[in-house]
Each structure stands twice: as structure tokens, then as C-alpha cells.
Image (cartoon, rainbow, N blue to C red):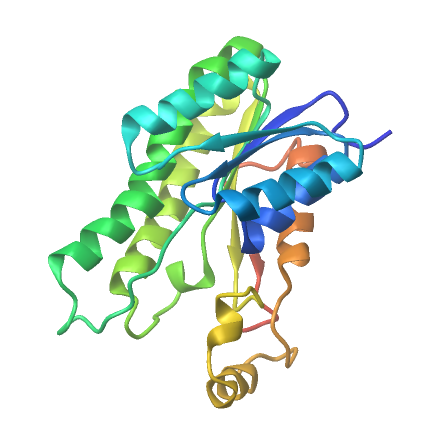
Length: 247
């Protein structure tokens, strides 16, 4: 029996990268998993197929988390399907990298709307359910670049730094309802998106990482699963998974 047998989870942005790895790991531990996607339906169905092969339960939920109504309808759909929501993983995020001198209003608004506003919309919709259950595990995917400077990512870094601050306040307010709220802060992680970075640039980045390699999505997923399954006395904290790149 898995550590999350009987639990119901929702992972936003779960069709690829870190979100995909999280959804699969939660399912591997026995959780029913809602797989959120916005446009990558084929990739989301691949995740659902993988979960089905494990003998797990999966629900595909299309929604733009930057839209408050869609985000809340997504939460409601999961609850209607399974009757509860135990684990919310706020993973969905986007980048629109530009130096500040070149960054337009749309670049700023789109990133903050998805990465930070979306987290609020999903969390605020899940809170009443978890409070009623007297149980919840909320895990927010932030970033090392929300902790340290990142050239060309003022919008992304601000949103990810905001996630860390939000996590602490939410943890403080929700602790009395047996709801923990934590953040996972990945460093450079070998996703399909990062794989497109030129090899020369990758090598430059890798040379600055003490462990001399990039993280893998599965390593981020294991930290999320630990918080969901075994982190009962952990709240308001950050787990940094960056190979020592930020200490």
C-alpha cells in the first residue's frame, strides 16, 4: 500500500516537466490525481495513461489557473468526482524572459497572473474544502530564482518570490485547521523546456553548481511527495533543491 492511499490530489500544470513527474509520483504512492492542463491535452492524456498503467485513478481537468472562475471550477470538479481534496500542488507557471529595459506590460502581467494570481485562485478555492475536512497539504512550486537574482527574469522572480511570502502567511493562518503549506524551490532542472537551452550555456550554468549537474523532475517530485505523505510537522518552510547553487 502506498503512503498516499485514499488521498485525493490535484496538480496544476501537470502535463509536462516537473508537474508531470509530481503527478506520476503521487499516483505511484496511491493517491488519486487530478491532472490540470491548459493547452497540452495530448501530453496530459499521456500522463493519464501512465497513471492507468499503474492501476491508479486520474481525472483530467482543463483550466487556465490565471482565470479565477476556471480555477475555482477546476477545484469543484475534483471535489465532485472524489468527494474531497487532500493535496493541492500549485505547480503551473510560465516565463516571459526580458531584461527590464525590454520588458513590456504584457510580459509582466501574464507571468504574474499565471504564477502568482493563479496560486491564490486555486488555494482560496481549496481552503474551504480542506478546512471542512480538518486536513490539507498545500505545496507550492516556487524557484531558486525567487530567492536570488536572475537576469532577465524580474517578472518570474517577483512571482516566485511572492509565492514564498504567500506560503508563509497561508501556513500561519491555516495551521489550526491541520493544513500545512510549504514551498519547493527547484534550481536548474532538466525539463524538455530547459533542454532547448544551447549546450554552451548549459555548461556555463553547470559549472556554477557545486554538484556539477542539473536536477531531474523526479527529484522535485520526491520532495513534494515527502511533504504530502510525511511532512505532518512541517509548515511554512522551503525545501531548496538546487545542487548547492543557492545556499
